[in-house]
Every structure is written in structure tokens, then in C-alpha cells.
Length: 82
Length: 452
Ligand SMILES: Cc1ncc(COP(=O)(O)O)c(C=O)c1O
Image 1 (cartoon, rainbow over the protein chains, first blue to last red):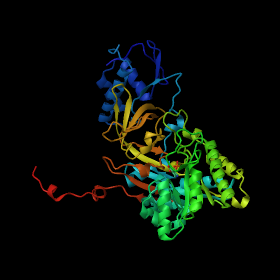
Image 2: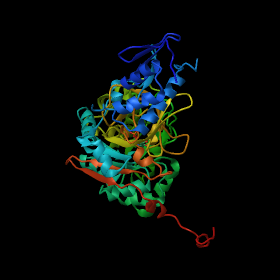
Image 3: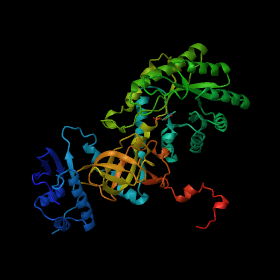
Image 4: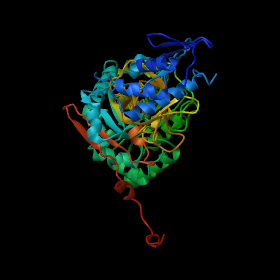
């Protein structure tokens, strides 16, 4: 899973897609995930990191991570989706 | 290192230039308490979902309505519209405040009697009154509001048989500039039916014409329509005075004032657009005071205000069953309450608040009910913080019509709790059980035993 390399991420949770001109807002954990995806971190490593950082069990993180990534695909912010 | 508070990751497109219909800050500000009662504790005690009614809001609203009219007109009487919410505890709060009862069926009539209302304070409306209902209303001296000529003739026969002179009013329908015009109930003003019915009653001399009634529609946003209606009823009353020298005792303007709910498709929330009691009172009272009555003949003004009186006091507390993503990427959240108990979701975009604290991040979602039915949509678009399974929400302004029009469909109807002025919560209607539902079923003997 990888996201578009040209996505601009701001520290305040503002995301800009220069190819379409669309902007998005993300919450802090969403921003953290986007950053890690941009650095080409593997899904499994990202989930492990989240588990270590946040008060949530593995099932919750697994479920929400999957949902978030599906959302990125839907918004056409991933590489393989053009 | 201590692990941080978790929140589901969210991403949401920013739609610049398009006004966000539902994204107002107050919409998703958490509501953890209602009248100092914790939402979480209420759900723990009474289950989820649960309807909650604030006694304080009921009484405050009643007083506000009463004040709006009494400061503008000398004789005012409210009559609680039973169909709006006929849980007995609710009726009795309004009766205690001074409301009469307004009923539209034998069932509601019996309820009002059982709640201790004297017969002469129960207004009997509606097109469907059986002989048994009429006889009971005649014996109790209840004002009977005649809906059609068949009823007028039947009442006349009964009065003859019973050797009594029932107190009656006629329901009048009319053009008040509001579309659609509710002309299916009562006698029409413009084409002269109403005046004919009045003449039949007075000349027949079997029935005592004590009042004139109208109910011009529901969720009315236009006070001026009430001014027109009040003028037309006053015109009939003055016509009776002139022709027969008789005084009409009361003019009943019905119900219909809009509550603070937001109609579907409306851009602004109802709290910003619905007129308040003062505006309706100003329109009605000014019209009556200026109609030309001499002071001693000023009729009593009766109001059958339903939804505007109770809507604000009612809440539905519920919980999240699950989250999912739809095929087009939209977020969907499944709640444990659906349109079977929240009937008004068909008309209103109900305000729904999370019942626990969140960060400031939100997402757009569709809110579905739990029914395995496609129609079960509570809100087709709402902006909420990231809710997770078992989180609670508060649905606002649900006091009117839900607890009477709800359906026992697929699951049981929930409990109803009153948040008392005594600081305690009171169960006023128990959660239904399978025993309640099956109590009325009967199994034919031959279907009892079979082999599978
Ligand atoms: C005769 C009559 N009176 C009063 C009401 C209460 O109306 P609302 O809830 O709109 O105030 C109704 C409701 O339809 C009604 O039919």
C-alpha cells in the first residue's frame, strides 16, 4: 500500500493533492499514518507502531487501519489507483 | 512510555465553496447530561435505546406558551392533544399545569377520563366517534366537535333518545393561504357549509352550540395564517350573535405551531426558523381582539398545541452497533434505534449529538437504524466525531408523535423515562417484552402440535 508521492501534508492536518486541486483534513493519527505511508513503511509495521503508541487493542487498530486505507483508495489518494 | 488516547484515523475532503448544511459546531458538541442526569447512567439503568422526557422542559414550555397568550388575551385555555404523546405521566404533567384534554378517539377519551379529567374538560375531536363514544361524551358533558353532517344527524338522534342537549362545536376548514389546505376535516368556511351547519344546529334546537373549532395544519411556520383563521371563526361567531342573539363561548384554534425541529431539505435549523409562541399569540390574539366582539362576549380562546409543547422535552438515547463503509466510500454508522421507533425521522433532520467527549475532528456519515429494511435511515447525511461501537448518542426534539406513532416492528419498543423535577428519573413506560406482544395472539388448536 502506498500513497501518491506528491501529496502535501501540513503539520496541522491539512492534505493537498496537487494533481486534482482537492484538499482534505485529517486528524493527528490519520496524519501520522499518511506520513508513514509516504515513507513507504509497511502496513504491518505501521499497525505495530500504532499499537505501541495508542491505548487500543490490536483488533480495533486492524479494523480502523483497514477502513482508513480503504478511504484513501476511495478518495484516489493511493498510487495503484492512479 | 504511557500510551496515548486513541481516536480512529479520519480523512475527509474539504468542500470549499459549498455550504455545509449540517456542519454547525453545536451539532456535534457532545451532550453528556440532560437536566443534570448522565446519559451514560440512564442507558446503564434503563437500557439502550431509551426515550427520555424532561419534566422541567415540559413545564417551562407550557408556562412560556401560556404566558405568551395570557399576556395578550384575557381568557385562554390549553387542551393537551393526546395523540401527540399520550403516555399518562406526560398527560398528567400538562393537566397539572392546567391543560384540558383534546382527544380524537374513544381510546384517547377513556385515557383522559382515567387520568381524572372531568368530562367537561375533554374536547372530543375527530371524524370517527362511535355511538358508544358519543353517548359517553354526552353523559359526561364533554364538548363534541362535529366533523361531518352524518355525525350532526346521529348526534341529534342520540340527543332526542337520551333527552339531553349535548354541548357541541363544529370543526371549520378554510383557506388561510396555506397549501395544502386541510379541507377533509369539518365544514368549509368559504363555500358556506360551516354557516349552514351552524344554522342547522341552532334552528334544530337539539344541540347546544358552544364553540367553533379549526385546526389549519401541522408544523405551521406562518403566524399570519392563524390571524386569517381567527378572523374567519370570529366572523362566524359574530354572525351567530347578529342572527340569533347568542354568544359563542369559545373559539378553538387547534394546534399546528411548528416546533424547533428541522424539516428535511431545509437549509437552516428549525431553532432559527420556527416562529416562537409570542409570534403565534400576537397574530391570533390581535385578530380576536379586533374582530368586533363586545368585551363581555369575547370568546374563551382554546389552543390544542401538540408538537410545539412537547417536542423539545423529548430525547432518544441510543448506541452505535457498527461502522462500515459504503460502496461509494461514504461512511455509514448503524445505530440501535431506527425509524420504527423514531417515526419523525421521515420528516425531520433530527439533531443528533455524541454523548461523550471527542477531539475536534469530524466526518460525514449516513446514520442507519438496526432494521433489516432499506427504509431504515435515521439521517442521510450528518457530521459527527468518529463514533465507535457502543458509543452513545442523544437524538434531540423527539417528544412529539414518536411515542404514539412508533411501531412494534422487528424489535420491541424501548422504555420511556421521565427526568423528574424531584431530581430522580422515573420509568413511565416499561420496555416491551415478547410476553406483551404475544399476549394478544391466539393459536388455533390444530396448529399446536406438528412434526418437523
Ligand atoms: C384537531 C387537532 N388538534 C390538535 C392537534 C395537534 O397538532 P400539533 O401537534 O401540530 O400542534 C392535531 C394534530 O394533528 C389535531 O388534529
